Length: 501
Image 1: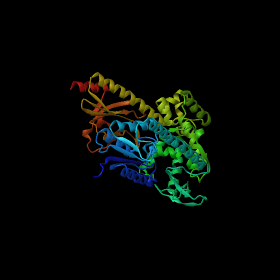
Image 2: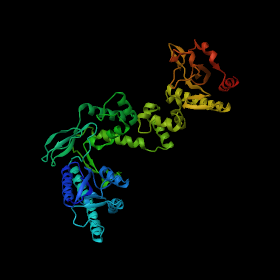
Image 3: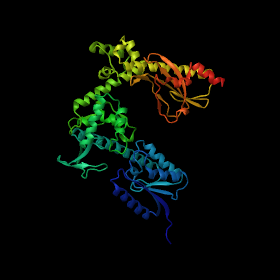
Image 4: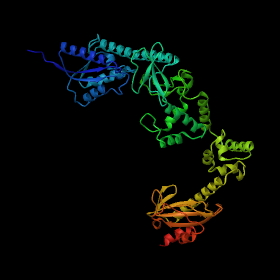
């Protein structure tokens, strides 16, 4: 008569995907143990290529614990090769907790290669705790050894894992320093003694990198506009995704583009949360490989970044305008952007317009172009009309939904505010009025400036439906009488009429 068998599950784990033999060895040893001790293997849970430092990512152990806690387990014993396979948790109480969860559900955890008995006796508990501490300490010691080796290899000019990035490629190098070939995405060196370094990538990628520096330094474009331009030109990144601000920033700030190998920029020891390190802890090796960007250009980009990130006070910004006036005798947007101070957009954002900043700095308007002054006046008129429009809508208690900064839905009717300057086409003063909008509107409140673009001349309420074939209309001094039927004396009168109907 055969002896009854006890249903058991196997749990095997290996730290890296290169240790497949290790899991097979564990499984073979556990099956042999099961046969000798009267266990029947009914399930097996695997975690291949998974670290034992945490529970995260260990699908095998997570599934095992889930089956136990939900009552789905079809076994009464878990066979594990040794304590370290269960885990190298840095808090040994965590390993004990997961074992206790199993034992509380009536399922025993058996470490088959350990010398202590699989019971809850004081001696077994003491030895098991010691083994857990030894497993955790092994990981800590190994982490220190690996880190020190990585520092030495970086100082020797070799790369420590990860992809090369745009404009660079990984090169496998033999132990004697001889190049062995370019490594493609996902490829690894074929010998443990080989090393990996960087080499410049294809010429087209190098050209794009130089363009990025030119746009950033010479055209003074921000990263977001650089990424947008490259995407508009459909420049590939080689990563299967479009250009982003982060990728542009990497090209402008990463030391690898000047031939410097860098390590320890951030820390994530023992599966902890990644955190950035102070620059004094970074490990550098300059001239480790051929640079893609001249060092002078890289330094200029770093200085430009610091300048753009500087927290300028109002007085400092106005002093820059005065310095430009003293040096050049005039102030123009081009001179402002080419200086080492804030950009024109910074002035417009801080002081509401460049013209306002000029006035606060005590610089007369003739230093500005006519177009700049006209844009300032248009902005002021638009702001005033917008405020008056909001007051009128509130006065008539209209139901208002704001769709864009200059578009509203008022009592179910969509209107858009448009303030236009006078321009000269074939010597005739005219105004460009955009009829087709996104989102679509029912009426355009057209605010027309006078011919000198100094004052508001007339307000019109134009029904878009009467111009179905037009994207734009171009009223001129000759054709303005056609549009008098749409003229309104004021916004108050316009809302008064709307209320009366």
